[in-house]
Length: 215
Ligand SMILES: Nc1ncnc2c1ncn2[C@@H]1O[C@H](COP(=O)(O)OP(=O)(O)OP(=O)(O)O)[C@@H](O)[C@H]1O
Image (cartoon, rainbow, N blue to C red; front, side, top):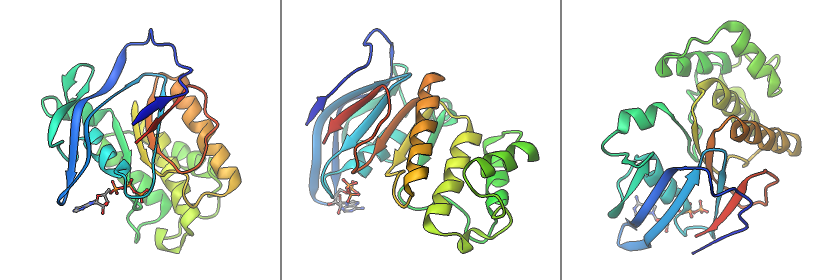
């Protein structure tokens, strides 16, 4: 496992940290005693071949699954101790669409805002969907949207969630060239606003303050 290509200032305080975490899935140990740190303003791009354990690593970083050993810390505190504080700051987009298929794009945004306790105005909801090319598609059930359009609804959710920590599993899958650029720009803005991103992707990315972590 190697970390390469850091253009980040190391003076920034680390925020999300894994200390000596080991991951076992089924009867296989995927990785052992892995350390990583991601600071505010930084994007960590986790790479590796299919099945190496990227998604499993993200799940440990979200606290959805506990490591076999080792710890994940948010601002120096183990996330298992302060899970509600950490989860209030976290947006996790997994492999599978985290959308309710029978609800419309607009209803999905409203539903998530309600779950997250966010006051989402109609103006904000519509303008965010429009920003991601969904004008005229707001009232279609999500199961009538293409794979890329569903991803765009998730991008709208990334904006409206207002979380500091974004953990994104292959967020560029199914996006067309323009949407890939749009998402990279959205991630760049998030970093400028002191956000923090950990993502997996099989493609090279053009994002400032990106550090690659090869698993
Ligand atoms: N619940 C499970 N039980 C047993 N093995 C599992 C389980 N979940 C995942 N695995 C195995 O763990 C390994 C790592 O899976 P993971 O999804 O983390 O890989 P990945 O690096 O994200 O792969 P990809 O690039 O294909 O998405 C795989 O061999 C997978 O089959």
